[in-house]
Amino acid sequence: MKVGKAGKASPHAAYISRVGQYANRLERGEVLEAAEAGNMPAWAEHDPQQFWLAADANERTNGTTYREMEIALPRELTPAQRVDLVREFVRQEIGDRHAYQWAIHSPTAADGKEQPHVHLMFSERQRDGIERDPDQYFKRYNAKAPEKGGARKGYGPHAGQTLTRGERAADLKALRGRWQETANAHLHRAGHDARIDMRSYAERGLAMEPEAKQLPSQWRGDGRAKVLELRAARADVRQARRELSALVPNVRAEVIDLETERAQRRGKAEAPSATAQMLREQFEEHVGGQSAAVQDMARQIFEQRVAALQRDAFERRIANKSPADQEKLRAAFNERLARQVGQSKGDEQSERTMQGPRRSGQKGKER
Image 1 (cartoon, rainbow, N blue to C red):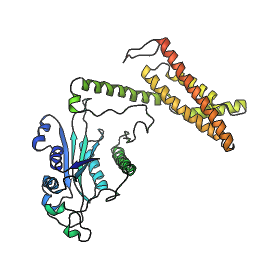
Image 2 (image 1 turned 30 degrees about the vertical axis):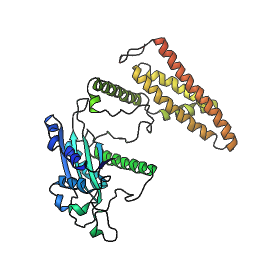
Image 3 (image 1 turned 45 degrees about the horizontal axis):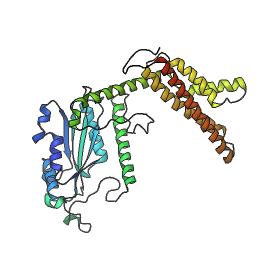
Image 4 (image 1 turned 45 degrees about the vertical axis):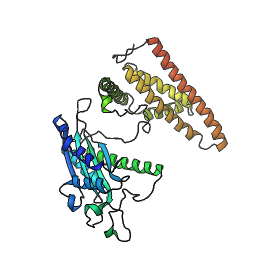
């Protein structure tokens, strides 16, 4: 959520609308898919720029003239469907409470495809049905006589309250969750299987680093080539995950089947490490002929899943033990699990050493 200071609202409104000095961006091939404004006072209803000019002129020097959300839009949706998505989100988050303006831009991304996103800027000033001229609109709110003061400031469920850093973070996370839900509903309605996920890579358990934001100056020269190389690598990772899903569609089911089979054959539940070893052997048969990228990603995900399933099975087995016994058994289990994972990584490293180094980007099957 971006916050605009006094003097910044009018230039930013011109920027997102691609008017004035920013009109030449459209001449360079960028597309302005749609733009709208709403909830404006009567004196700015037909020219939203007048509202932002008045905000710059009348808000306090250290005050906030606007807030902005910049949100990536799904490529899968058509321009008309993206407009519908933005309009619904604005109705949901802004309603009739704040003056707003938005624009959808669709420049060309590094991969040559479109990169649609929306800029949604709005005023913190709340509409209350009282008509005010530009000078009065941005004055301090008068609680005893609202008609004599400016429009009250405040946005969101905690408007007017002073929040802690943690509370602000929680509000932002909730906002991102509402966007995810709304966008995915539109993707579903349009018949697409793709979904957006606003969680971080860490929250999703992915060992990936987010792509750093680049300034225009950094994008020139070899900066562009590095970004393209990184995005190509990430595309390989996504393909590896898809291939993994096809190779091992249901790890949990295989674990259950193996545990059941061993219990029936030996008359007791087998140790988690033995079950995991059997599953690893089957898994290696599945991925043995795949590319190095697929194997590396598959093993990483596979080990995480197996460890989680082993822990679940272990906790079920000790559920009836005393707390003291549970603590001792849990410590021993964690130590055994750590050795098991370490051994697995050591075996993988040994295999790579015997195979010799592979050139980056080399394709084909492992020897």
